[in-house]
Image 1 (tube, rainbow, N blue to C red):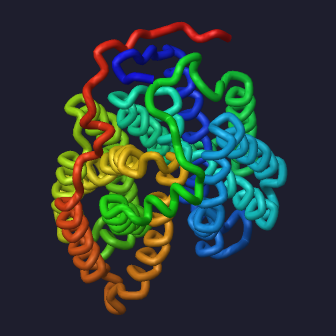
Image 2 (cartoon, rainbow, N blue to C red):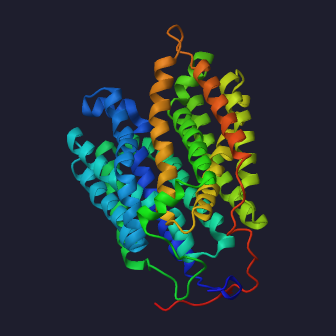
Image 3 (cartoon, rainbow, N blue to C red):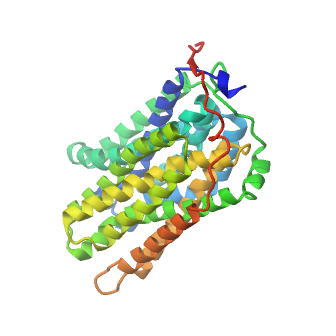
Length: 415
């Protein structure tokens, strides 16, 4: 179908809203125990590290399941594939609530929810491509990323309140019921495709597409950039309290800095993605994000003022996390006709692998005296600057620079 004659379904916003709902719930389930680690350790009579594993298991499972999940997304579509992720989150979320008094069962449930995660996250650009025209896809991907950050913020803020006022058991049951309701909403309302295509969708087979992507210079550069950028964010977010503690910042101040970093990412994902679609450019915004987030990381590394720490955390989150949805959409465009799910999944996979490596590396190399992580942070800053230099070699996607559609008429879907 010609890009000049695209008819856009208004139901695309319903699809995106439901997708954002199930992604948010999945991320809330992932981060559940992080803000109440000490309380959870006492409740289950286990170590803090054991509680940390309840979150870490998501990274490990993602590495194992990402490529099969991407293949299912590309072959069977979003209703089946994302539905698998939503149902796994709902069923194992409720199981976690019912069996919430037993640590081993909670771990089993976390693994089940973690298996569902790549079915949700890897479908971000597929949802955008299926339902949105090319000039709205970075915005749609940005809102999908915003849902990830919103789920994390909600978990950080809501979990301690519920645990204090209702107890660990009731908190887990509440989350389980909400996750099951979200799965039912998805299955009831989500459609696979709009009545007419939203733009170019012809894609190659999964493994043919993967082979094609790995022979494209721009996509290889993007994989390396995601390996560094997403891994750096995961490591800094994980160790934010350890990073700032040697400089005299309290746990509360560290938590505020971490929360502001996520909030900055939420704002950046919406604003920068919209600007990318508005000006029909990806590469300049990726460069901007990497350059300014490097300054934010320098501030986090050396800030002794609480205000400077908060400003630095916000800047890093706003720009580094905003590069995510733009990078996902750029990857889908330059990998065309490789499937979106495969393109998105490989980029996320890079960040999960590097995240685990950087998290353990920062812990291993911290100062034996006061626990300072300054040397590790300087290395990460160097890697972020290297990412910027690599990004200068990226070239704009041909799909995006095609003639802008002159007619994008909304049509009403058949229910």
